[in-house]
Length: 357
Image (cartoon, rainbow, N blue to C red; front, side):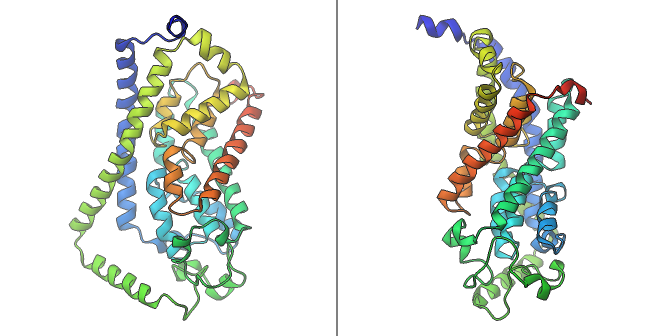
């Protein structure tokens, strides 16, 4: 106990000040992101998203990484949206890219990151976070394009794919786009096969669409607000936990004995903050306010926290399992951890003051 007291000294007043500061700054952005997710889910048809994609697979993957700028989603809300888009025929490679990029590469996160780091190189932090997140997501999409969907999509999702009995890859089927014309012409153009099974399911979808069109704008707006409120309540608990852990970490732990030795080693600092991001599982609209308080750590380590957390954390393991096989979820987590750690440790050699803006 004497050893514990030597490096851990909890003070309720200091903790409360730090905790409330992080919480009050992050909650408005969390609420805004949840409301946007609800509005997009109710008012934005999937064909709008597929219609924005070019016909070339690589270009489509790159554009998918930027769709969050038009259709911003948090990491919690994007998973059910991805399931619906896959059912409507969005190529899995594009879905993977959007899944990993949209929680960060969107205007809400850009503004929240800039606000969190104001006075501490906010422009550089925001730019590096968005660019690195986009590159990681695009690379994941390119890798997934070369796999067969049966290797990583779970059976329940596979059964909903258009033309599910045919042999297909995670990208675009050979010749599918040649016969489909523009992707905007059909919501299921990359995978669609005329006359395939699923007719009853298609009729159910048409009935649901017809019922949705008959609803008034007020009813749809209310539904969007309810979805947004549910998303907010689902993830708010993680924000509270993350803010509490970060506040304890900053106010109770002896900086000189524990944090400073850890922060001075690039590998230790980077992997420690990535592990912290995994366990606190804070929403991407709020995590910057926690990262901004970790001032003892170098910029690359905090960047790793900001990039890894939104693409793979404790809650996302369960959410990703709704779409992917468990072995693939594990492989995805390990791959993202290693890739982001290597990049951020390499960035430790760069003198970032020259990039400040």
